[in-house]
Image (spheres, rainbow, N blue to C red):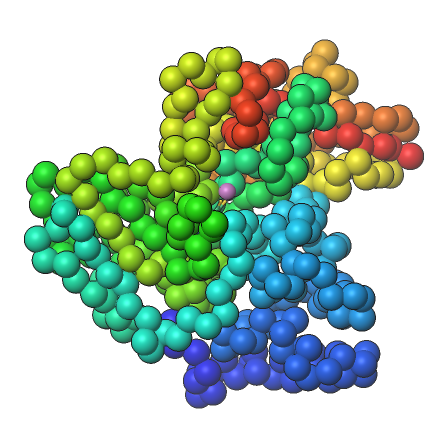
Length: 422
Ligand SMILES: Nc1nc2c(c(=O)[nH]1)N[C@H]1C(S)=C(S)[C@@H](COP(=O)(O)O)O[C@H]1N2
Ligand SMILES: [Mo]
């Protein structure tokens, strides 16, 4: 994952692309410093050829506006054509995925920061410590140590547990606090790194170890400490639980956890700790704010306050929220996903649930990631609440309502996507 090698033709092409863009930006009156900031060049090399023209134009427009609070919390550009910005938590607009392939590009991937993106991590002095009562041989790894180990890549989603939270209010009339996401707090990437199991084995994990808790280097949250959350040893030792340093073929971007994060497939977003500093392995159960106070289900239907683990089944149309489309025959697209299994089928209704038609699923259908689907529609003028209902291969089907929980997690009901045809 080494960059800046001009002998590499792909790198050369990207350098040239950056120069062309810089010319365009300069003509548009943007300073060099601001330009580099917009393209996220502070981590080093950025594959500019992967940015669509519209995105860069949207960035340029934003550069002339007032600086917003989100710029203190994160590094990457947040043009409003592509994101909803909730005070530095960035939600992807679903219509932007319609032009994409299977993966969410790094520039479009949602960002959820409990704190803010650290900008001062120096990879040459960075260390990952594995420690605690559950290992015989506490061990420190350098970045180069990680790069020297067997490289593994997996295709998986990361989705915030609160994705869909705003719909508790909109569709069920009970507002909850927290980021008012619609459905864009999810993305799918190819993640590259090493198996967490391999690191634990090098630290001589004991057979008596029960919990593993990665901890972030972002600033401490008042009274709660560093963002951290335990998982059971079984999940930590799974083949696909990784420590990742690469995302879609690039170094992990700053906002997504540079230099390294954990990837815990299928689990709630918060399990995927960014800006990793240490991992505690313990012979007794571990607790933090993020598995006791937050990320537990609280409400009348949850007397035992279950701790969140896997993400559930959801889906979204690749359309603007409450947007307008032209009358006539067209194909609509969307994606559905589950933290448990591949998608078995998706049914779509344009008439408020009276009739349902099967959507056609794309070939690429990965468990703990998503599948894209298509449906033909002869759109006639009017106002619609478009519905898509998925069933996964674990036998789950999206319900028509969700039991309430106070923190607004796991809203997986079939959504009525408001759309006007004119
Ligand atoms: N260190 C650290 N890790 C973190 C967080 C954080 O604030 N700090 N946020 C978590 C939450 S709640 C989510 S949903 C995901 C979001 O990952 P992304 O920002 O790369 O999309 O990161 C998780 N890992
Ligand atoms: Mo999250």
